[in-house]
Length: 134
Image (cartoon, rainbow, N blue to C red; front, side):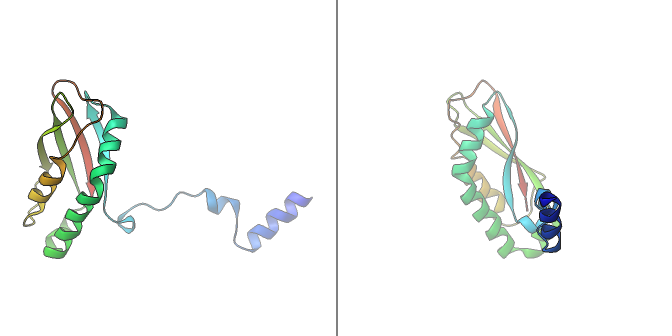
């Protein structure tokens, strides 16, 4: 009886347990973010640690791009960035697909992600794919 009464009171007050269990809505309201999509011959946990270190600089590139060319920025919703890794886990190459035509944006991202250092090293022809959400 108490559980029914407590549940009814929570519903009346708008504090339904079901409302708390609902996932947060996804989409543009969360703002730009960078996430690890997949790794090839490299540790996923290591990639997440490396991304944590570089993410603030990558988000700064996104913010600068939004300020410099808001029209072009609005046309792009996501892109994939691939970081090619050497044997010690250092970045050898960075590529962005599709190409984003905002002045200085690709160069800014390349500068950031060429500082990538994969903890624990990596295998031959290793790479990390990252998702950029604008």
